[in-house]
Length: 301
Image (cartoon, rainbow, N blue to C red):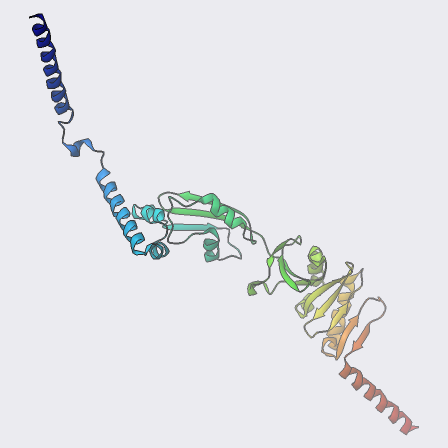
């Protein structure tokens, strides 16, 4: 009998345990499912499901690249879908650059989102642009990017070994010259002429109203300037007192319209004289004039 009584309580305990467990399980899940899920989870799951379905369908159908080209990367498209797109870009500090040039340089277009926009990378891209010395980029939620620029100021053009560059006032090369908007800048030519650009611009100032007639300045042996007029005439200036020599040229122009003569070069390197070299046509005309004068004098004799 003892084994029978021992077996009874063991079975009874097992039944009670099972009944308690079933009762506890029912009470733990007694609330409706909708009340136990986080708010908004259904919407996010729906968006995720639709995105996953669209992505899978596009990939299987071979249209993924087309969708990416049209709507951008999936992460940017999803961020824009939930209201984290870029609605406004403010740019300050513009001088020579245009707004579209800044947007392209920063990598900003309608297919990206503010959430995944890399402001540091945009700043690095902007500062790698030759005309930009310094840049700052900030993300302002919910949908704005603020860009502040400090541009390098183009000062002159420098031609060396057949190449043309845009330079700053200290001679630093900004970029190759391939933009017509800078064609009005003073042009210096020759080795190290970029480092003497300030001197050349100061020299032009001494020419007064005649300055627009001067097209370029060539640095000779790092010591003096030769000027090229718009008529093609070369003006050879001295190493010292070049400003005074240029003023002498201005006086000759006012008195004799010297730039309109058949000349190749005007040498002003000597303070007490002006040497002029004629073109072939001018030399021939002068020789003929002297010949005629000689014949006239002979006839009079």
